[in-house]
Image 1 (cartoon, rainbow, N blue to C red):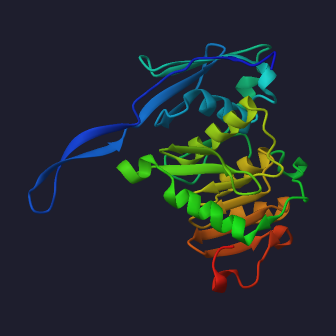
Image 2 (cartoon, rainbow, N blue to C red):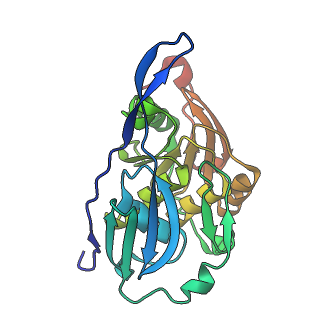
Length: 279
């Protein structure tokens, strides 16, 4: 890609060891997530401070700008440079962001861990999004996705207190797995990686350990993904927006249980699968 932005390759420890005393007075050492602040500057203008693990800060920054609708294509970004010593990321754009003051003046604090926020109205541009109706999701593929998440090595298993998001192919192959202190950060990181890898979302499946709120549904739609899966549930607004978009929404995806809440036409049920086991 000729206009791919120049990226730093910032590294940070994802966990920290601390001492703990249990109910019997026994001392032990445990791992906890290493939450840190990352202040985002765009063309030297301070925009927002994100609280993050720092697993993929460059992808998080790009995905955040994408999902906030502040940049329309990766070509608009010249560089993304993360400096953990000052807990900041500097983004340089090629042409500037038109009317950035007005576009970032209104902020909506969204539901969810870490209090995510979005600029402008939550429903801006939703009606202009068209999701592909061609993709199908087999019941066996859904089970494969859930099992992959169950066996995935993760910060959550080591230290807890984080959310995970993942992107899968239509056949159930894991493409990205990102954990962060908030699910909104994890989905933004996946959005950034998709742009960097020039990956289309039309035939992809998105999984999150957290709730499918309005913010999560809108971000999934902006990434062009027609399938959203959650280990948890959904909110009324998340469900309403999924209906407006024609998005396939599945909640309570644990083991072989799931609740299909919208988009039944994309789901391929496989009779006898529960009785006979996985094919």
